[in-house]
Image (cartoon, rainbow, N blue to C red; front, side, top):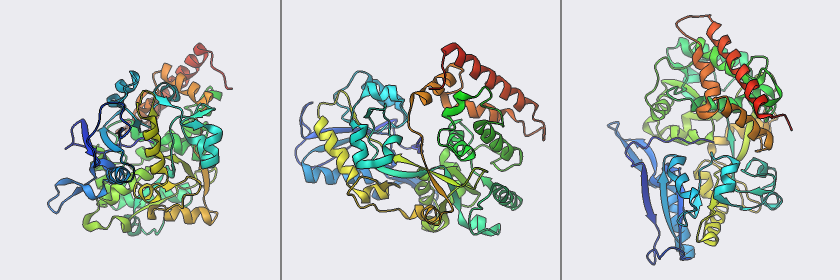
Length: 452
């Protein structure tokens, strides 16, 4: 899951030293570890606005920094937290097996990169003893798990402002696509943006990957593009999902002016200028923290997406991943820190996750209440996120060769090809569908890839 936080006031690479007791020793000391993380809000605190509209960091919500302090107090192992904004900040260190990288949290590396950069955490069989079916959704090569994710999370659902949908005459997110689109129309007619997308980059469209699983009723829908010669056509689940999003664009369900950054997009939902976002649980607490007068936990809700025709689902997967750097000079301390996190249900809940280790009593964050109730009532079915397999790697290899993978271009190029200044004209869109289908088949055949 890709997490993006606006860090305008923070340097590209900010280092926070957390701990007490003896000062950091030389490289190789067993009383110090360095943790590199992209989760700046958990180290520096959530971004909030004061009464004058100025953005500041609320250090009381710097939960990872607080946990590191407690870990140091209990174990004597000092923790240095290094915050970076992207994989580009950490990858050069991992490439040379820098001994100062004991733990890192970058979740978006391919399995090949994890095998190159991370120490195997344990075997898949050992993982299943502690985390059950969720091990299949952790980064693994079929034998070893490289990124331990000690919690579980619900993904790809509807994050919405309850006051807005109530003003449109709804008390909950409708269960069917027709009813859902009828609600979006009523919200638009109120002068409110139905869905905040933040279309300044392609990555927000990456959620189409998860939503296509709901459309197809299969967690492997994206990977199974390999089996088709027309994966981007609306007769196929991925193509059908991109077409659905583009239909919403044609109907004016997304913002008409591009938000300057993702923080502004979240603000639009927090302040009721937009009704919702279609994202995972990670975005919920960030929007809640932005609501006026501290009303966040009351008006910002998280509910299953509607039934797109194959059933009503919610994606669930392992979350909050930590890996041990292959070059770490304190692997024992690194593992001790990760296990400390896995055993801390309170920290995981504050971070928006549910503890998932066997023997740890989970604390379910309030934001999951509506989804839990829907699942328990049999109205929504859990769908485990697809595991990383050779087929999924092959599918991404084809998309990469076709110049469609980076920054989710496979969705972005299609979505952008529809011109809202030409209502009802899908010629450019259909031409782009053919271009992408042809490129996919061409490079799949050139690479000699077949479904395994």
